[in-house]
Length: 365
Image 1: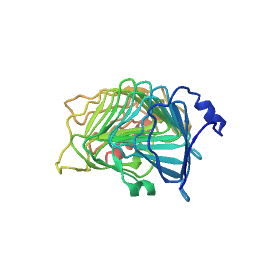
Image 2: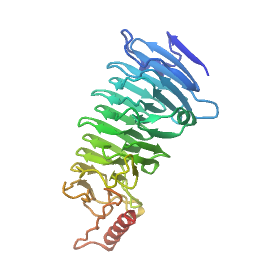
Image 3: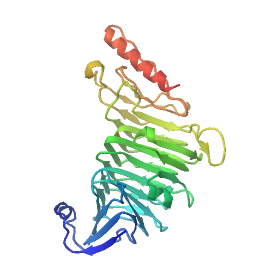
Image 4: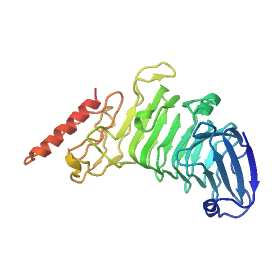
């Protein structure tokens, strides 16, 4: 393994354009130790370029840091071999990561800091895919590329007040307390936005189906006060609060694309049964018209998600047109929604409504 620390001209024109920042060096990421693959570190004023190459036979690099923050007005950019490469970055010191400037990469970026991660107001994360975890990742799992996270050092969280964009993959936020602030925007136009609060969480693949909360605690909390946009959106926690906006790019009859789960069958750290307190699901869910048979778009549909705080199985949202369901799960079961019928419906419209009801019914089994 080779580490290079350089200053001076960059060899990549696009990186030069990206890092046109002057001034003196600030509290950029400190103390790198390359564990897998190779990396070069180039400081330009108050910005940092990290150029990685993947480990032999893999599509990932692994770097341990003493601390990892991005000051306001600065850029930390990871230049990777391509969008399919992943750079796994673990913080071993006891300082939280404060992302106040721009953190970017042409590839997939994983940032792990058990002391906490904050993406502040005005900050930007712009990558192919992004995972921020305040749950620890072991040395062996990091080197093997296994995304198995577990809580340590008490309760630490991920707090997003700025903007996060994953251009081709997922945005995954993990901790015992995951919060998206009211002015924050989290976007994955070609992937999923996932908020997972738990004690032990595994990522076994992409999207909603790839996140597994293996151990939870009644205090684990996921909060969305801002805007979550993705092809699929999921929130998973013992305590759930959604008073912001969830926007799913696509709603299809084949299944649900928006899912919120509170509690469930996962084992609790203290062994206690039951779910957390009543969820606050008074936010909104938006979606464009679903595609019916033959790919023809249905009528415009956008539904406000309303939940009565006294009902733990409140119906969260359905498309007003009734031709497809946006399904929300509260506990083990997905809330069952009956597709309404209206006078004057055509045979095709009645068929679409029946198909939507069947999809919802399948999700509740």
